[in-house]
Length: 597
Image (cartoon, rainbow, N blue to C red):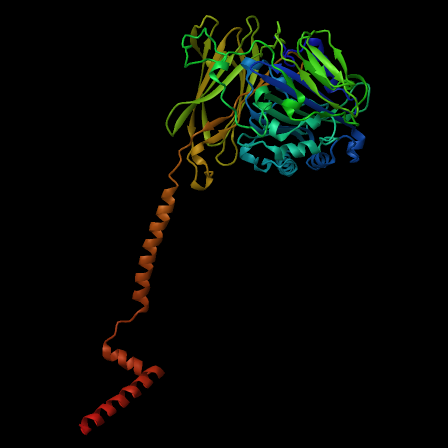
C-alpha cells in the first residue's frame, strides 16, 4: 500500500520532517511551508512546537508549555490532547493529498479527543466534562456543549501518538461540534499559547481577516508525552495552522472588498467548449504562474525571528517555499537562501531583527510542482425524501491501479438519527464502469456498533473495509428521523441539524505517519412544526379560560336580589342611612312647598 507524504514532498524529506516532529529537541521551533496550488490557490502551513521536561511539567514549571493549558490538563488528568478548529472544504481533486496526511485536520467546526487517566468510565467522563468546560473558557468556544449525547468512545479509529507508560488506565473520549463557527475569538487564545504571542516570528503573519477568509483552514493543538531513546521524557505541545488562500482574492485591498467584473475584452475563455460564444464564456486557467508576495497575501510582512526559537539545525531556516527552481523569487536583504536537492524546495535563513518579505514573480513555467494523489477519495451525502426516513450514502474511490486500500470508517451520529444497520448495502464499480451489487460482508471485515439512547448518547459506528484497486465502493444504509420535543428545536430549526463528519483512518504501513480523511458535515432536515401554532393555541386557550373563569367567578360572587331587598340592605350601612335622611328631608320640603301653593 502506498504511504502518503506531506503533499508532494519526497519520501526522504517527509521522513525528516516526521522524525523532527517526534524528537525531543529543540525546546522550541517554528516553521512555515508555502506551496502554490492550482486555481490561484496558496497553501500556507504554520507549525509551532515546544518541549518541556516531564519533571518540570509535573512541578508546574512549564517553560515552553503554556501554563493556562498545562494546569487544565493536570486538573483533568489528561495525558494526551488533540483539539481541532476547521472551516471550509479541502478540494482533494485539485489540491492533492492533505497536509500532514490529514493528522492535523479536524471535521468542520470543532473536534476534540483526549486520553484521560481514570479508574473507571464514570470517573473518566466526569474529568472529560471538566476538560471540555475549561477548554471552552480558554479558547472562547462552545466546547461546554459537548455533553453525553455528543461524546463517543472510539475503539480502533484513533491511537495515541505519545509514549505512555501505562495504557490500561487511559480512557479515550471523542466529541464534535459540527455547527460551531470558528472565528477570531478562537484565534486570539491560540496566539496567546505561543511563546512570542504573535509579536515576532512567523506568527506575525496571522491576520483574522485573511485566515478566516480562506477557502479552507484548520487550527490544531496537540499535547503528548515524548520519551526518546537517548534522553529524558518531555511533554510536547504542537500547534499548527493550515490554510488555503485565494491569491487574487487575498491581494484585493480592504478598501475595495467587493470583486469587480472583468471587462469582456479581458476575459480568458476556453474556445474548446461547445457552448463558447460571444455571450458565453468558460474561464481558462492561466498557464503562467501568478505573482504574489507575503505583503500582498497576508497584508503584512514577517517581523523577524522569535528570540525563543532554536538557532541550530533546521530551525535556522524557518520558511520554506515549494516552487520549481526555474521560478524567479525575490526576498529581503540579509536573507540566505538554501535550495534542496529535489529541485522544488528552497528554504530561507532570516535575519533576527529585520522584517522579511518574499515575492514570487509572474512568469511562464514549463512544469509545476507535482501533487501527490490522495490514497482514497471519499464523499458522503444524505439521500431520500420525506420527513420520516432517509438514507446515508458514502462513495469511496481507490485511485491506485495496483494496490487495495484498507481503512476504518468512524461515524458519530446524533441520537435523533436512528440508523438501521441491517440495511447496509454495498455496490462496487470497477475501472471499466461495470457496477454490481455485493453483500456488505464481502467488504466489511469488522464492525463495532453502539446504539443510541434517546437524549443520553448518540450512535457510534466503526466499520473496517477494504477497497480493491481501481474500484469505487458505494455504501448505503437507511435511517429513521426522530420527532423532537418543541423545546429541543433551535431558533433556526428549518435550517436543519448538523451531522458530524465521518472520520476515515487509512491503515498504512507500520511505524508510518497516520493518514486521516474527513468528509464534510451534513445537514439533516427533521420534522419541524409550525411554531406559530403554539402561539395561536396559547392565545385561544387563554381567551377560553378567561371567559370561563369570569363567568364562573360572577356566578359564585354576585347575588341576585329585588329592589326592595337592595334598599333594605343599603339602609343598614352608613351610606344608606345618610341617603335615607336626605330622602326624608327632600320629601318634607316638597310637602311644605305644596301646602304654600
